[in-house]
Length: 157
Image (tube, rainbow, N blue to C red; front, side):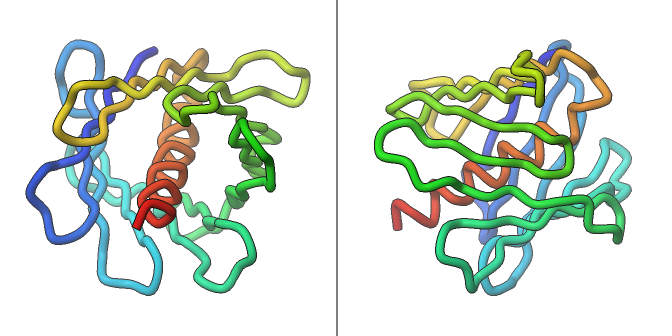
């Protein structure tokens, strides 16, 4: 299952639209005023599904993940030299990225690929393709992309 992740161009806070391959809306994401990034995920009907919230006091970037009101895990950036790496503890996933930080592979505990994230170039805003092997993992993969994009945004400013 593929999702297209597009950042909105004109918005006061982080704002994204996520589409299915057929162009229909899968999710919308809106940031809210907060210390650090706080991104709320809604389904196509506008019901809040979850949230990605940055921890402000942390040595390396760290994001808490919520489904509804329940904290389900966190994403932590690892200290590496060339290839960015992240751990997402709610699924036992490990994430490895390319040197240019455009492409990522989400790996299961057994080393198999759970999802592939590719950044599309030549767009005015951040645009990613999320190819998820199991459709039930789509929201978790989306949370991971949100955390990585927020970390890159914080790092570049």
